[in-house]
Image 1 (cartoon, rainbow, N blue to C red):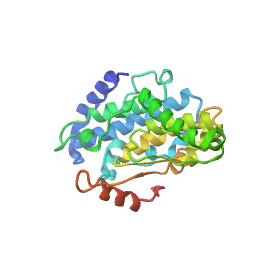
Image 2 (image 1 turned 30 degrees about the vertical axis):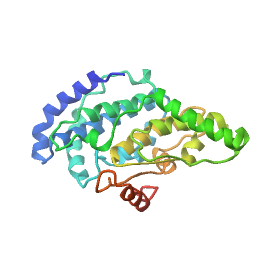
Image 3 (image 1 turned 90 degrees about the horizontal axis):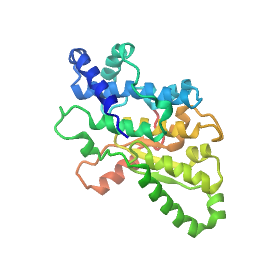
Length: 268
């Protein structure tokens, strides 16, 4: 799925707002971060309305409660000031979101991440390993994992036993979305219950966590899923927590320590 028109429109917005960003001492990449958050908010609200959801339930979620960055930093206040000035002037998203699948939200995030201005030393996308996983791959991996588990536990065992499904590099949540769907189908448990109680994830990017949380909210608040949840309920359910990257590339011990030191439920 191509979001070239969307990216192009946001790049025009960036060019128009760079003087303001400079005045607030924000680099072009930081200004891009804010534009991405603003547009993701509007897209998410449109997707919620198109699916008969209440957009006000999103206000407790990470994407709306703050202005999360592509990386963990202390610049949220500066990003918030920039957003407050540009949000009233921004154009509506140039896509009919009611016609797109839930996975499109995560794909859009990855497309906007890849278009981030290159004013940093290294490619953020390569450094954080942020590449969208297509649904065909997530379906195959999830099916094989649950097939193996079901062959061990049996169908009755899978239906009666609460699982802990972990994605340690969560990204936009593509694997957890697919895992929730398939586990709910095989176990007979309500989709919302699976999302609230059986999914866990971590990522280095606060914005990726916000996108994953929003995607899971769209999924588990769907008609027939078992309940209507505020976005923050999904955040607690999925145990999304951001972690600092290891000090040295490939340092598995450092990754383990950083995950153990991070609360599974974010207090923010």
